[in-house]
Image 1 (cartoon, rainbow, N blue to C red):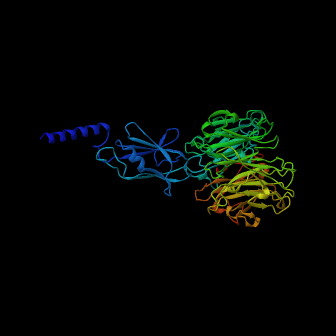
Image 2 (image 1 turned 120 degrees about the vertical axis):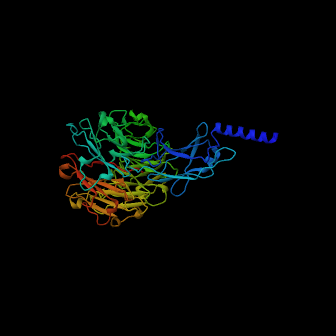
Image 3 (image 1 turned 30 degrees about the vertical axis):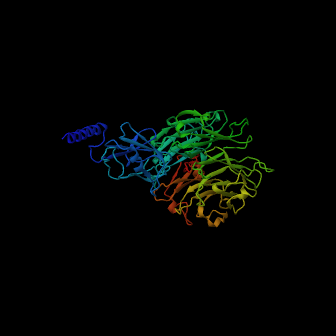
Length: 585
């Protein structure tokens, strides 16, 4: 009788202890899952948009055995690959937070799985039902979070509130773009406020910035190298808070050059997350900045997205590279490239088009840098002639040859016959020193004075064949400066590439229109093919006109009228389309 009573008493005490600890006695445990952004705010898994770097919070109905949960819980991509991360637990072991240690892919579908082996710490080890819930990450270049890529176009000579040549930038919702689109239909209009600042004056002075504040919305930036006594300025705007009428002082960050005539912002580009902290970073060129003790060496500054808040100057950079000599225009063009060297970190390139090489003055050079180490991977020199300005126009090209390394494209508009040429270099096959003669693919201009490669751009995968594509402009002298844009399928970019192998050639509407500014803008119409924007800044008395093309309409018969949308500037001399927001690599 005593033995039976002792067993009963022990059972009562054990039950009370388990109840006090939160384990046992509650049946099978259940769980509620949340997404946690880097700022600590929480979202349902069904919410949109979801940033690329998050944590998963699992709140259990009972205290859990931590080891069993950590063994059972994974975050997997659509291919079943588990994502790396670390666990943290609340006091009492009812809340587990799994923090991802890397960024997720754009527009990716991910599964949060908890196997049925997750259990309470009770003697009975009550297990929970298997969990498999999904979430989808943000779309690249999507400012307003609707799942479609968006884009921006500048009119740098436009008057703003009566202020001459202050400049205006128009931001368009990709989802709303159509045949009736006009600048009045922009989802946001950003007005300059100082005469002759000319915000967005150049192809690379308007850009997507990536998600610099890690809120799930792509952000946007615009620059003026004339601003603040030519110190130059860059304004960074939150995509989430863009409004119909936005002024420059609504920027979440303003970056100013440190010295008069530094010309900060002559080129700007999204960079990706170079320091792996979950915030997208940016790169900014300043062609006349002084670095390393060399006057007017030029500089390219890296800014952490996490630091982009309020008014800062160039000294707030997390890394900088400088030209090796004065007056080479180092930083005239900068571009993020994505991962070229295969170390998992995005890399970048900087053009210095007036660099001398051997006996050739002004041959030009492009410098390729490791984003992880901020060290030089390769220097590529122009070779064809003096003053070729090789490197005036450069761009990340995505992965054109399908080797898993991102590639680059470089234009050389003024070779010895003014034919021009375009050079593609494979990121996985770069030596420390190269010349344009070593390009992995070369497209040479076929006509005297045609000036192939006046502007170049990576445009994503417009034909959805798994290879990224490129585009470039030519003045088209034989047809009276209409201007042309050529699009080439990345899979054809090897060796000497015939102009006739192009995917498309689009010719400007009229003589002297100078069709030519072009940028990839991501998938505006959400059809799985990347799209692009072109512009003719000289059309209509320099009123300017922008043309948006769907990737599905790009082919051998594409004409200037085969657009998703086309719209003109507000007034003569506005030069709408001088700059256009491009896609991030």
